[in-house]
Length: 129
Image (tube, rainbow, N blue to C red; front, side, top):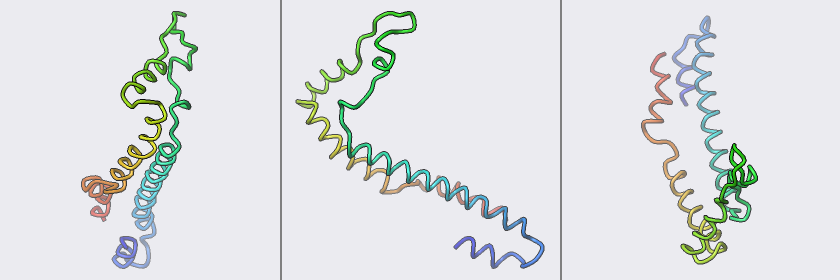
């Protein structure tokens, strides 16, 4: 679309470097959009297979010791108690994340993946030619 427009406007000879100049932003924008959608697909997969038991807290990764060797309380244990009180059980929380949170995430990111101002900014390079 915009490549065809640029190709019809530019003369046939002597401006190969200009073609490169307008193709670079197109390639970069393609890369950004592709990366964005890859991240969305990966996030959706993670939400689909979410399991509280597989989550990791920082305190567990440092064996519950701070920089001076003092004992740290386990964040995951505290959060597990809160989740059980709020949602009834860990399994109910897992199901909620897999079902409702995943659905809300998909609706938000797929409804309008890029806002109007982002699209205007991404396309503004075309006005320089």
